[in-house]
Image (tube, rainbow, N blue to C red; front, side, top):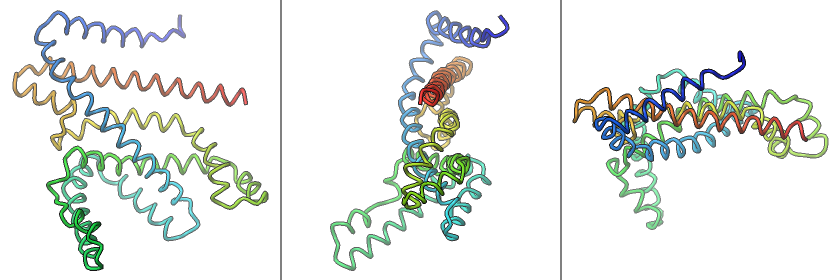
Length: 269
Protein backbone atom coordinates (compact mmCIF):
# COMPACT_ATOMS: atom_id res chain seq x y z
CA UNK A 1 0.00 0.00 0.00
CA UNK A 2 2.84 2.38 0.75
CA UNK A 3 4.20 1.98 -2.78
CA UNK A 4 0.83 2.59 -4.42
CA UNK A 5 0.85 5.86 -6.44
CA UNK A 6 -1.88 7.61 -4.49
CA UNK A 7 -1.16 10.85 -6.31
CA UNK A 8 -2.72 9.32 -9.42
CA UNK A 9 -5.98 9.01 -7.52
CA UNK A 10 -5.90 12.75 -6.92
CA UNK A 11 -5.26 13.45 -10.61
CA UNK A 12 -8.06 11.14 -11.67
CA UNK A 13 -10.33 12.88 -9.18
CA UNK A 14 -9.50 16.29 -10.70
CA UNK A 15 -10.21 15.01 -14.22
CA UNK A 16 -13.46 13.31 -13.20
CA UNK A 17 -14.69 16.40 -11.34
CA UNK A 18 -13.86 18.65 -14.29
CA UNK A 19 -15.57 16.29 -16.73
CA UNK A 20 -18.64 16.27 -14.49
CA UNK A 21 -18.72 20.08 -14.45
CA UNK A 22 -18.38 20.25 -18.24
CA UNK A 23 -21.14 17.69 -18.80
CA UNK A 24 -23.60 19.08 -16.26
CA UNK A 25 -23.06 22.85 -16.28
CA UNK A 26 -23.66 24.84 -19.47
CA UNK A 27 -21.21 27.57 -18.42
CA UNK A 28 -18.35 25.08 -18.16
CA UNK A 29 -19.41 23.39 -21.38
CA UNK A 30 -19.36 26.71 -23.24
CA UNK A 31 -15.93 27.53 -21.80
CA UNK A 32 -14.53 24.14 -22.79
CA UNK A 33 -15.93 24.30 -26.35
CA UNK A 34 -14.52 27.80 -26.79
CA UNK A 35 -11.07 27.23 -25.30
CA UNK A 36 -10.32 23.83 -26.84
CA UNK A 37 -10.06 25.52 -30.24
CA UNK A 38 -6.60 26.73 -29.20
CA UNK A 39 -5.21 23.28 -28.39
CA UNK A 40 -3.99 22.78 -31.95
CA UNK A 41 -2.09 26.08 -31.94
CA UNK A 42 -0.51 25.27 -28.57
CA UNK A 43 0.63 21.80 -29.66
CA UNK A 44 1.82 22.97 -33.08
CA UNK A 45 3.78 25.88 -31.62
CA UNK A 46 5.40 23.59 -29.05
CA UNK A 47 6.34 20.86 -31.54
CA UNK A 48 7.85 23.20 -34.13
CA UNK A 49 9.70 25.31 -31.55
CA UNK A 50 11.05 22.25 -29.77
CA UNK A 51 12.30 20.69 -33.00
CA UNK A 52 14.20 23.87 -33.88
CA UNK A 53 15.49 24.17 -30.30
CA UNK A 54 16.86 20.62 -30.46
CA UNK A 55 18.90 21.38 -33.58
CA UNK A 56 20.06 24.73 -32.22
CA UNK A 57 20.92 23.20 -28.86
CA UNK A 58 22.84 20.30 -30.39
CA UNK A 59 25.08 22.52 -32.51
CA UNK A 60 25.55 25.01 -29.68
CA UNK A 61 26.42 22.18 -27.28
CA UNK A 62 29.01 20.89 -29.74
CA UNK A 63 30.32 24.42 -30.06
CA UNK A 64 30.63 24.73 -26.29
CA UNK A 65 33.09 21.81 -26.19
CA UNK A 66 34.85 22.77 -29.42
CA UNK A 67 38.62 23.31 -29.42
CA UNK A 68 38.05 26.35 -31.64
CA UNK A 69 38.25 29.37 -29.33
CA UNK A 70 35.92 31.52 -31.47
CA UNK A 71 33.19 28.88 -31.74
CA UNK A 72 33.47 27.97 -28.07
CA UNK A 73 33.14 31.57 -26.94
CA UNK A 74 30.26 32.31 -29.31
CA UNK A 75 28.38 29.29 -27.97
CA UNK A 76 29.08 30.29 -24.38
CA UNK A 77 28.01 33.88 -25.06
CA UNK A 78 24.69 32.71 -26.51
CA UNK A 79 23.98 30.41 -23.58
CA UNK A 80 24.88 32.98 -20.94
CA UNK A 81 22.87 35.74 -22.60
CA UNK A 82 19.73 33.64 -22.87
CA UNK A 83 20.03 32.19 -19.37
CA UNK A 84 20.51 35.65 -17.89
CA UNK A 85 17.32 37.20 -19.27
CA UNK A 86 13.75 36.29 -18.17
CA UNK A 87 11.82 34.33 -20.77
CA UNK A 88 8.99 36.85 -20.99
CA UNK A 89 11.48 39.65 -21.70
CA UNK A 90 13.16 37.48 -24.35
CA UNK A 91 9.82 36.85 -26.05
CA UNK A 92 9.14 40.58 -26.27
CA UNK A 93 12.70 41.34 -27.38
CA UNK A 94 12.84 38.70 -30.10
CA UNK A 95 9.34 39.44 -31.38
CA UNK A 96 9.63 43.23 -31.51
CA UNK A 97 13.39 43.83 -31.81
CA UNK A 98 15.06 40.68 -33.09
CA UNK A 99 12.63 39.81 -35.88
CA UNK A 100 12.50 43.38 -37.31
CA UNK A 101 16.31 43.48 -37.23
CA UNK A 102 16.41 40.13 -39.04
CA UNK A 103 13.98 41.39 -41.68
CA UNK A 104 16.16 44.48 -42.20
CA UNK A 105 19.23 42.29 -42.60
CA UNK A 106 17.46 40.12 -45.18
CA UNK A 107 16.44 43.28 -47.07
CA UNK A 108 20.09 44.36 -47.22
CA UNK A 109 21.14 40.91 -48.41
CA UNK A 110 18.46 41.14 -51.09
CA UNK A 111 19.81 44.48 -52.25
CA UNK A 112 23.28 42.97 -52.49
CA UNK A 113 21.95 40.09 -54.61
CA UNK A 114 20.18 42.65 -56.78
CA UNK A 115 23.42 44.54 -57.37
CA UNK A 116 25.17 41.39 -58.61
CA UNK A 117 22.25 40.55 -60.90
CA UNK A 118 20.55 37.69 -58.98
CA UNK A 119 17.06 39.19 -59.19
CA UNK A 120 15.29 35.86 -58.64
CA UNK A 121 16.79 35.63 -55.16
CA UNK A 122 16.84 39.37 -54.50
CA UNK A 123 13.18 40.24 -55.04
CA UNK A 124 11.63 38.04 -52.30
CA UNK A 125 14.20 39.33 -49.79
CA UNK A 126 13.76 42.97 -50.76
CA UNK A 127 9.96 42.73 -50.64
CA UNK A 128 9.94 41.07 -47.23
CA UNK A 129 8.31 43.36 -44.64
CA UNK A 130 8.21 43.24 -40.88
CA UNK A 131 4.41 43.19 -40.91
CA UNK A 132 4.44 40.03 -43.06
CA UNK A 133 5.94 37.96 -40.24
CA UNK A 134 2.99 36.62 -38.20
CA UNK A 135 3.04 36.64 -34.43
CA UNK A 136 2.86 32.85 -34.34
CA UNK A 137 6.14 32.67 -36.26
CA UNK A 138 7.71 35.20 -33.90
CA UNK A 139 6.54 33.16 -30.92
CA UNK A 140 8.08 30.00 -32.37
CA UNK A 141 11.38 31.81 -32.99
CA UNK A 142 11.37 33.18 -29.44
CA UNK A 143 10.69 29.78 -27.85
CA UNK A 144 13.27 28.10 -30.08
CA UNK A 145 16.03 30.57 -29.29
CA UNK A 146 15.24 30.51 -25.58
CA UNK A 147 15.09 26.74 -25.19
CA UNK A 148 18.02 26.23 -27.56
CA UNK A 149 20.30 27.56 -24.83
CA UNK A 150 18.94 25.14 -22.25
CA UNK A 151 19.15 22.25 -24.70
CA UNK A 152 22.77 23.19 -25.41
CA UNK A 153 23.68 22.70 -21.76
CA UNK A 154 21.89 19.34 -21.71
CA UNK A 155 23.77 18.13 -24.78
CA UNK A 156 27.07 19.47 -23.44
CA UNK A 157 26.61 17.65 -20.16
CA UNK A 158 25.63 14.46 -21.98
CA UNK A 159 28.68 14.54 -24.23
CA UNK A 160 31.04 15.26 -21.35
CA UNK A 161 29.54 12.37 -19.38
CA UNK A 162 31.03 9.93 -21.89
CA UNK A 163 34.52 8.82 -20.91
CA UNK A 164 37.35 10.49 -22.79
CA UNK A 165 38.83 7.07 -23.46
CA UNK A 166 36.07 6.29 -25.96
CA UNK A 167 37.02 9.25 -28.12
CA UNK A 168 40.68 8.28 -27.89
CA UNK A 169 39.88 4.68 -28.83
CA UNK A 170 37.81 5.82 -31.81
CA UNK A 171 40.60 8.11 -33.00
CA UNK A 172 43.08 5.27 -32.60
CA UNK A 173 40.92 3.19 -34.96
CA UNK A 174 41.36 5.84 -37.65
CA UNK A 175 38.15 7.81 -37.18
CA UNK A 176 38.16 11.56 -37.52
CA UNK A 177 36.92 13.71 -34.62
CA UNK A 178 33.50 14.22 -36.21
CA UNK A 179 33.14 10.54 -37.18
CA UNK A 180 33.87 9.53 -33.59
CA UNK A 181 31.41 12.15 -32.32
CA UNK A 182 28.68 11.04 -34.73
CA UNK A 183 28.98 7.27 -34.41
CA UNK A 184 30.38 6.75 -30.91
CA UNK A 185 29.85 9.70 -28.57
CA UNK A 186 26.57 11.31 -29.61
CA UNK A 187 24.43 8.11 -29.63
CA UNK A 188 25.48 7.38 -26.06
CA UNK A 189 25.13 11.01 -24.96
CA UNK A 190 21.63 11.37 -26.41
CA UNK A 191 20.58 8.15 -24.70
CA UNK A 192 21.82 9.51 -21.38
CA UNK A 193 20.08 12.88 -21.69
CA UNK A 194 16.83 11.59 -23.18
CA UNK A 195 14.88 11.99 -19.91
CA UNK A 196 16.10 15.57 -19.54
CA UNK A 197 15.14 16.33 -23.14
CA UNK A 198 11.69 14.89 -22.51
CA UNK A 199 11.25 16.98 -19.38
CA UNK A 200 12.24 20.07 -21.33
CA UNK A 201 9.54 19.28 -23.88
CA UNK A 202 6.95 19.20 -21.10
CA UNK A 203 8.33 22.47 -19.76
CA UNK A 204 8.12 24.09 -23.18
CA UNK A 205 4.48 23.06 -23.49
CA UNK A 206 3.75 24.91 -20.26
CA UNK A 207 5.94 27.88 -21.13
CA UNK A 208 4.19 28.20 -24.49
CA UNK A 209 1.42 29.90 -22.52
CA UNK A 210 3.70 32.97 -22.43
CA UNK A 211 3.23 33.52 -26.15
CA UNK A 212 -0.29 34.71 -25.36
CA UNK A 213 1.33 38.12 -24.68
CA UNK A 214 1.88 38.29 -28.47
CA UNK A 215 -1.85 37.67 -29.07
CA UNK A 216 -1.12 34.20 -30.45
CA UNK A 217 -4.41 32.32 -30.24
CA UNK A 218 -3.25 29.45 -28.07
CA UNK A 219 -5.44 28.11 -25.30
CA UNK A 220 -4.20 30.71 -22.81
CA UNK A 221 -5.05 33.61 -25.11
CA UNK A 222 -8.43 32.14 -25.99
CA UNK A 223 -9.21 31.59 -22.29
CA UNK A 224 -8.36 35.24 -21.61
CA UNK A 225 -10.63 36.33 -24.44
CA UNK A 226 -13.45 34.13 -23.21
CA UNK A 227 -13.12 35.35 -19.62
CA UNK A 228 -13.04 38.98 -20.74
CA UNK A 229 -16.10 38.54 -22.94
CA UNK A 230 -18.27 36.45 -20.65
CA UNK A 231 -16.87 37.39 -17.20
CA UNK A 232 -16.89 33.65 -16.43
CA UNK A 233 -13.42 33.69 -14.91
CA UNK A 234 -13.78 30.55 -12.83
CA UNK A 235 -15.03 28.46 -15.73
CA UNK A 236 -12.40 29.81 -18.12
CA UNK A 237 -9.35 29.33 -15.93
CA UNK A 238 -10.40 26.04 -14.37
CA UNK A 239 -10.85 24.65 -17.88
CA UNK A 240 -7.53 26.14 -18.99
CA UNK A 241 -5.63 24.70 -16.02
CA UNK A 242 -7.09 21.22 -16.49
CA UNK A 243 -6.33 21.23 -20.23
CA UNK A 244 -2.69 22.01 -19.52
CA UNK A 245 -2.66 19.40 -16.75
CA UNK A 246 -4.03 16.74 -19.10
CA UNK A 247 -1.45 17.47 -21.79
CA UNK A 248 1.48 17.53 -19.36
CA UNK A 249 0.39 14.32 -17.62
CA UNK A 250 0.15 12.51 -20.97
CA UNK A 251 3.53 13.82 -22.09
CA UNK A 252 5.17 12.97 -18.76
CA UNK A 253 3.84 9.42 -18.99
CA UNK A 254 5.20 9.17 -22.54
CA UNK A 255 8.63 10.40 -21.39
CA UNK A 256 8.71 7.82 -18.59
CA UNK A 257 7.69 5.07 -21.02
CA UNK A 258 10.49 6.04 -23.42
CA UNK A 259 12.96 6.11 -20.54
CA UNK A 260 11.95 2.59 -19.47
CA UNK A 261 12.28 1.32 -23.03
CA UNK A 262 15.77 2.82 -23.35
CA UNK A 263 16.85 1.20 -20.07
CA UNK A 264 15.38 -2.12 -21.16
CA UNK A 265 17.23 -1.95 -24.49
CA UNK A 266 20.46 -1.21 -22.62
CA UNK A 267 19.98 -4.28 -20.42
CA UNK A 268 19.19 -6.46 -23.41
CA UNK A 269 22.18 -5.19 -25.40
